Amino acid sequence: MNKVIVRNKKNIKSFADVCGAIKVLSTGADNQMGSLAIATITAPTVPHYHKLINEFYFVLRGHGKLIVGGRMFPLASGALAIIPPNLAHYTIPEKRMEVAAFASPPWHEDDQFVLQINETAADYSAAYERALLVDEILARAGLAINENADSRDRAEIREERMRYARQNELWRLSLADMRELLRIK
Image (cartoon, rainbow, N blue to C red; front, side, top):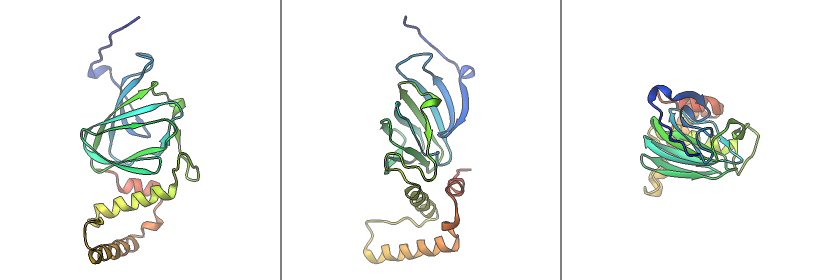
């Protein structure tokens, strides 16, 4: 039987998840083909993967980076990302991001696997996440490396990055502390 579902703002459920503040627009109970939610992301999300779900992210507002299976992709308003099952992924917002997330089959908490520090899934590693988070901290401190700059300028910025990292003892920060440092207030 086909059914039409219309939800108004007051009927939309919200909860906190590894991907931020989630507004559930539809679930598997509405349609077995998929589910739809809006994620508001203000801090790096928790690395995780799904064994069954294909996820489709459409960025409604904001920009940042999506890390999937050890590769980094820039995200901006209007971008679409399709994440197949069994690939570890997480998002680092540059500013507050709103992402429409469609899952097929429908999202279910039993198919969401959070990665542990020493766990490996689809080329993910804690060391890689640490490097990405440190790079983002340095970029926000105005110390991004411009690959188009000449070698002398790149060498100078690398020295400044090392000095900043030493002064702020970035190597002592846990992954959770780094994510918190990048949280957008």
